Length: 197
Image (cartoon, rainbow, N blue to C red; front, side, top):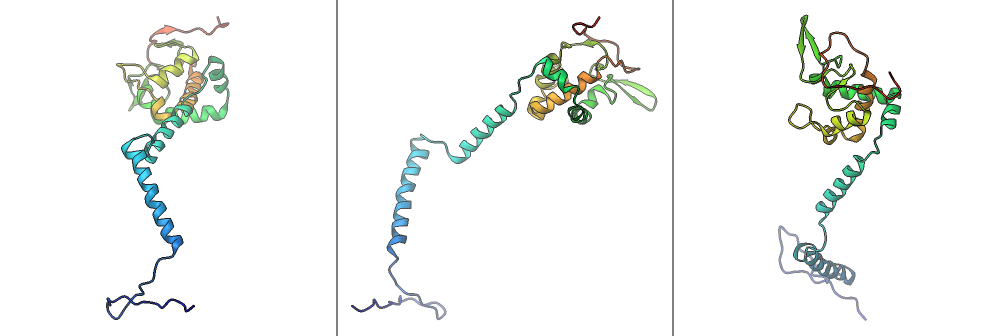
């Protein structure tokens, strides 16, 4: 049996010709299967909408990840323990300097001193014993993470994430009752820790 002859196609371009050979069966079957697959893919995702497109699945997975990342079992004990951890306090101090300083001041006492003039800031003094929205550690965390409606205190959890909110809460806990001089007058209700009189 003689080998099949190469057939040259009739057209020519710039002296270049090409063979008119039959495509291999494996390539043809790959092509046919891809066409069949694409029909069912189109039917499943675009017509019946019984599946999520890759972009939608990615968005859903990211939303689930963010929800899990922002779920932290927060308790008074956990926050007080974090307030004793130097690494957490350093992280919280950095967050405070970057986000909280404009409203609470560089010394967290609700005052900024510029050219010898004391300027009262919108945020309360965080170094005294008085708290507008509760002085328990979980109250402070809730105020930071969820914010306070109709005030300058926004919800920081969506911006910083739960872990950074924990860090800055621990830092604020380390500041309370330090009574930094020259701070704003007390606002809110005095918070006295249990067992401390």
